[in-house]
Image (cartoon, rainbow, N blue to C red; front, side):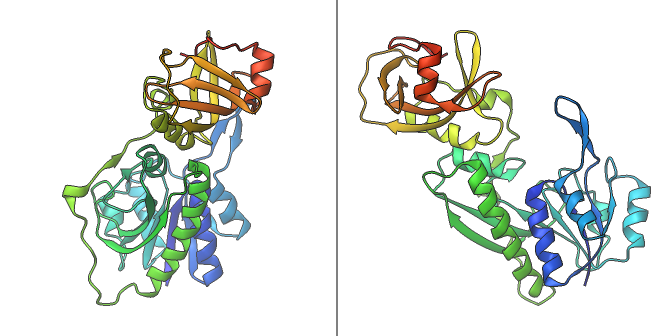
Length: 309
């Protein structure tokens, strides 16, 4: 089977490398154009492009997929199937219909829950007990196609978006290989139930700001969901400060305003929330490095009664 692979970040590369190891023919990789990033604004290749180059496979980097030139390029490969994993661009109908076996997608959620751009972060923020991957036959809608294969895992109480991303990348690669072994058989696809659909909107800066008036458990979920990027943040005075680890103290009773430091401890400090309190363990002020909360307390001269906003 000849396959075109479309993907961009490291999540994509895990599935791609599994396909290579399984012996599938991959004549072309489509990935997003190189980007400038960092302080020096140097040109950075996607993780998918790096993997393709390492295996000597042609890469193609169009700005979008809607032009006739892109369709002509895709058709010239004479592929049987296109696999899309975290590509980051809309795939038009002309390409969806260009292959005998269509286009399939590896999506990091249990569809129809968390369709869209940020399923891993949104699942943690919502306090979901489990998540997983779906291998989906792509349709024109946003993650609306029927499901070929699904695999589930629990969300651990200590999982961050980073750790869950790693688990789901490997789970998705395994599910992809298994689903390809059954592709084309007569087993029916499973349509998604629209009444259960939820949407994982792209994470914005506003999403990452800590609202101390929320429940301690919800703030803890936010901190985990925003790790490793963009980082849950608050302000101490006018200094933007990222919070990287917290522990819920649900039994804490306080009349202090949310965001108030109510206790200094050897291994952290405690902040009042709308309900309960949080012990902060790892923190980072703007322009600084991540440090223990106790080190931050000493260098910032933090005292009981100080407030985070």
